[in-house]
Image 1 (cartoon, rainbow, N blue to C red):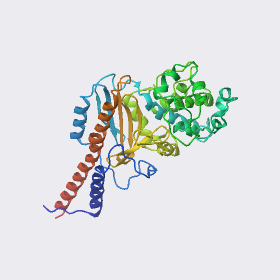
Image 2: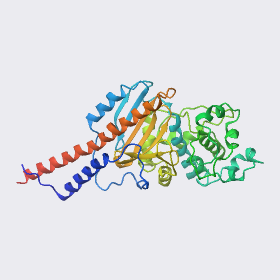
Image 3: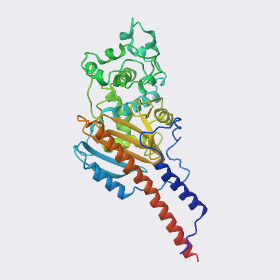
Length: 383
């Protein structure tokens, strides 16, 4: 049998082979020296995206996940459809669970909606007017230069309240005052220092700007338009909902949030976020000194198997991955109170890099084979 390749088919197969070659060129934590711009719209491919996920890799992901005692759930969507999901432990995949610092990605979405609705002027808006009661008489005038963008990208310059400083901060009688009165370790906007206190200040800003609690605003901004559940989560002693930690959302609902970002702000034909906000959130403003990943507005970015990935990352092994180039969205939840250390995180990252991303790439190869077979069949019939 002679297979006659049409020009379009040859181009398609070349694209698939190029993707496969790129997959072996980078490790999951690699970030190039020049971070490329996010695609303007996830639904604008140069050739038809191949469909599906390779079942052999999915089975390997299931088997590897079953060996991890702290892993709770894994949900994978491609082309907007959930094609793989597995509950390994913990609650059902429809039950809201604590996603720890993936909350920072969700909080970033709330800020984007607040800007779009006019509650905030923009990411460059200074935060000092929201905290005059605490800043009055502060000896360092540079604090008045801190903006919403600086909080989102962890570049406020304020001494961090995470890591070894976390306990003292959450044990204080006023979390907002504690954070905003910390000394500046760097000029605002110059250095990145990961600190959940920055995110909590954002929650306080949203509370004042929208004239409602962060939880109440989350209902109208995300829960209702997406058809998801965002139950109440913890508050500080003043009743301000914890910013950037301890939000509750189910793995299946988390996929819907990821799909909004993958689709440039849309879901089911409805605009949820401005496209410019999605781009701004994904664009790296700094680099993590621990992982080498880029960091934007509550989103990390790095390359996995040659494909640009954006992700929220929470303590204990909570992840939301968005890979627009593969039309791939992944939600992973784990025990939020027992981290398992770097070993558990590394195991999860390897499952994503070695099974789930290749499942999408090989799904592409399978479709290329199907296209070739169909072309060959048509050529035979034409003889």
